[in-house]
Image (cartoon, rainbow, N blue to C red; front, side, top):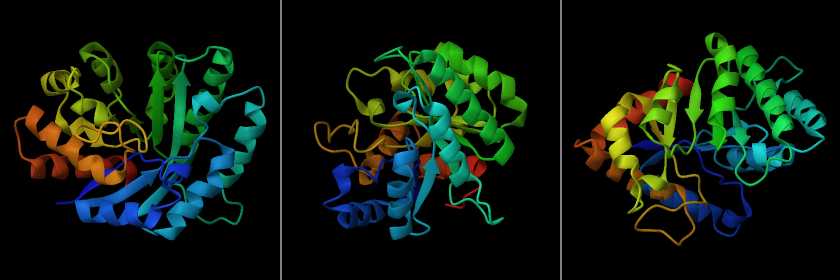
Length: 264
């Protein structure tokens, strides 16, 4: 049984000492692909280096994470755009624009800049025909408003790390080419997410993720998260939807192929 970790910060310092072993454990656990998001211009080289070390297995994304948006966001995006659009006419190595979005949780100091930077990257997604990997925290109203303006021109994407309620899920899923990214929060004992998803969201609108090294699932809470732990998310989804793990893997793989155009 094969499945995909659609969101893993494998280029981070947390994996520097045992990256080969981490990837080996992922392969052994059934992870068929690992998608590695960028969070800013400075991360582009580490994301690309990581993915080049495991060609065809680790696949890179590039975006400006909302928490990384500062006053110089225009200059940063200009540099990122050059990487996303090779001048030699070749294909971009990046499979998506991400991790991008809005986050008002920790600080609203650069709230306006976040909105402007996110909208610019949504425009890129429409122009370059690349999917989006979207982060949203305490900002869904603004985020939905921006996406609506470009909805018809977007190929789709993932609302990463969804942990909301049924109303929030319905609002995001009105964007028919998008899926919700589901990770370790699904397994937490106090989480209502299993009931929210099983009651309102079809499996055809979900993809698996870890967001490693963060938010390790039960029974690995307190440890560094890693791609091999995707299996625990898959198992919990199967229980919530009262179906088999194979069915969850098959459907989420199909969703990945539909959004990213990548065969699992």
